[in-house]
Length: 254
Ligand SMILES: Nc1ncnc2c1ncn2[C@@H]1O[C@H](COP(=O)(O)OP(=O)(O)O)[C@@H](O)[C@H]1O
Ligand SMILES: [Mg+2]
Image (cartoon, rainbow, N blue to C red; front, side, top):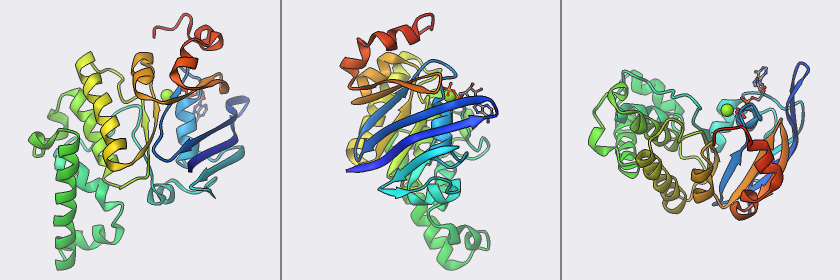
């Protein structure tokens, strides 16, 4: 069953068409890769899916309902959550606190009353803490629950961001270059973790990644963008040998 559909999605910034008539579909439970050279329009696709920008034309459907033009906070509440190309953690908060903050998005009223220490809210906050600990276990960070996020090594910070995104209980998780800057060990851990998120939590994953090997090993379907346009989509075996894909990556360090 379809969870996300882009139909001829297009966005123009002045004279530049950053995404040009892009169409693809994710089914529930997919591990779907979005790849392409630098400046191809990948992050912009995330921005139009998550309501950061409204597409100039075309449509975006989530669970069959049109979400084009819906503000980003509403889209997050509907069940789409993302991480960013550059780490955006609350640096002086602990790992646990970072994930609890993610959970507040689901329980918006709690945040206000939690700040006033109302009894019901304290109970809710305790619940969120327990959920946050479970998520930290899932991403193998429970041993650093009380460490400030700025003191974590890079690979762990990236995993923490994913745990925080999961605290919103998304149906669809968008990851923007999660393996960027990681060493081979960290990449391997990340790959296993993303698989676990899909297999154990049932979350559908759309992932932008520059590391071809990583994408080919993880994703079951891949969409290739170049200069804002589709050049190929299909399973990794087809993408790998597609001449247009190879040409687009020539001269790129992949
Ligand atoms: N807000 C914006 N205003 C103007 N141009 C933008 C904006 N966002 C992205 N672009 C342009 O759109 C193109 C695609 O960018 P981006 O989606 O970030 O590429 P990728 O993530 O594939 O590297 C680039 O040429 C970029 O400069
Ligand atoms: Mg990008």
